[in-house]
Amino acid sequence: MPRLLGVDIPNDKPAIISLQYLYGVGPRVAAELCHKSGVNPQAKARDLHEDELARIAALLDKDYVVEGQLRRQIAQNIARLRDIGSYRGVRHRRGLPVRGQRTRTNARTRKGPKKTVAGKKGVKDLR
Image 1 (spheres, rainbow, N blue to C red):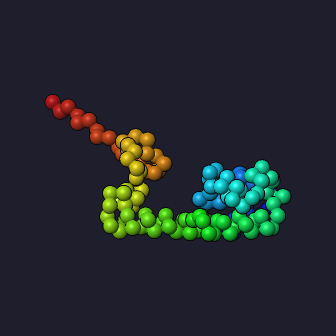
Image 2 (cartoon, rainbow, N blue to C red):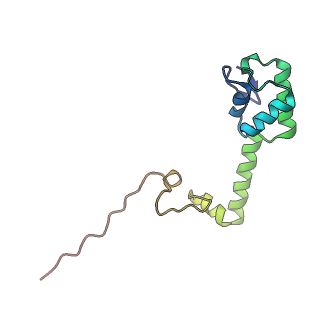
Image 3 (cartoon, helix red, strand yellow):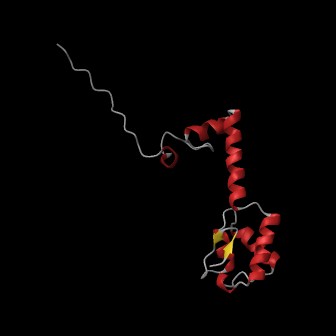
């Protein structure tokens, strides 16, 4: 298994697909990397030579923010929003949807499983 930036990329998939296993590399960036480094995008990852892997790694370090550095940058952005007390920061702190989605229904991914609250009992008729 070839290793790029501390991540094992799959052997049996084309290079353009294997590169997408890196955090922060999607289809567009993977295609750019293959084009700039002169790697055949359809070549299997196990067939890439050491110099090709080195060229891809050098491009990733120089031109792109990926993996640990990107994760750290995102965490810092969220921490900044929390610290300044912005609306988005408060939503992050409470674990609620941040981007304007409704929460009366359909927010289960962020809110977790339902916590059922017992309804009010009807008051008995006293005669």
